[in-house]
Image (cartoon, rainbow, N blue to C red):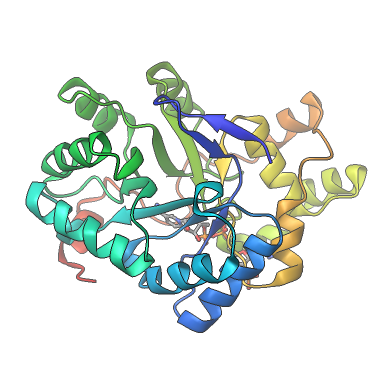
Length: 281
Ligand SMILES: NC(=O)c1ccc[n+]([C@@H]2O[C@H](COP(=O)([O-])OP(=O)(O)OC[C@H]3O[C@@H](n4cnc5c(N)ncnc54)[C@H](OP(=O)(O)O)[C@@H]3O)[C@@H](O)[C@H]2O)c1
């Protein structure tokens, strides 16, 4: 497994398992166990996914020593602010049955996330979080956060996939030494993604699937990935991307699929911000 060194020196696997929308706790536990048995070491959960308990159970049952795993969770909007972040972090740790997190992210740039960041900086210094980061922060929000705080986020988890390629954001984040991790690498299967003509024909040349071509395209762009699947054969397929390399011509061809727009929603849309602000978990 390829690892990447984050700006604080922490090594993070380039590929892990995402567990969004696996709300059945038994299914989530089984999925995480299958992934760990298949070689995955990074699991990406969030308090908002409601499945930290299941991730914690799977981690304990896996028998893999804690230091070999990389566990990420995220702080939801209702817990933004200095004091609330400290409480929410302890709750996540308890559910996960862990005594530290490898990566803790502010899920959305909404609410008092400056207070959250100060709490996270302290938790990082106390050794309770190895790396601290953000998610869904557009470049101007990152610039502002960096300008007014001591620690530069190590990761920004963003929607990045062939239909929304984010080259501008990547150029900016590279300058700040913030690592991108892609969410919805497969656009969650929307727009008939797995039958995309170009990605299918590129895959044929390498004997790889659309999923594998997409993940390989992302890691070749130096973007970390956390594909989600509850199916063992797909979990294994998504992990099997290290034995081929896309040519420059194929990388360039994939860039023609960019629509330069989110396939879901714009996190800067006032209605979306109002929705996140109201959502209780
Ligand atoms: N920070 C954020 O705001 C944010 C937002 C969304 C997601 N995330 C994180 O990113 C992770 C990944 O994103 P996502 O779950 O939204 O979507 P995704 O990984 O783009 O797509 C998941 C979908 O693709 C299917 N799939 C997976 N592998 C496949 C394969 N090899 N062939 C065919 N179908 C396949 C899955 O089906 P099956 O499960 O049925 O196999 C599922 O329907 C999440 O789980 C979560 O951890 C973060």
